[in-house]
Picture 1 (cartoon, rainbow, N blue to C red):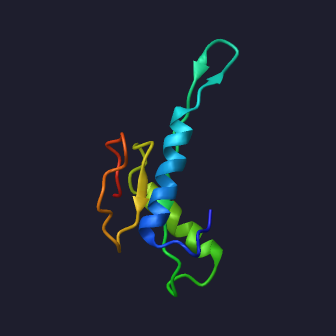
Picture 2: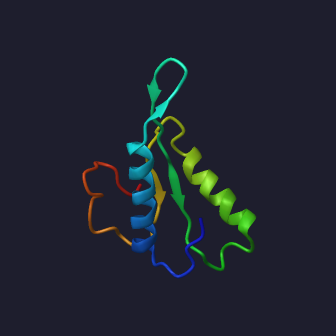
Length: 93
């Protein structure tokens, strides 16, 4: 998801809303109900990345730094996020 007009706090808020909405969903499987989690990497649009593939690779790199941790948001290091996510102990890493 590209958010070219959002600052990092705005992008973090969008990522947190997506993460929270996904966590609230329940699906019916053949034998039981199940839910899912979402991990999101925030990578700023900057001159450091020449194309979308490089942005995508940076996001993958951020997510691989903690491979056993699920349901999280990573990145967003340049601008401190002044609030914890509502109703969540998750935050920027």
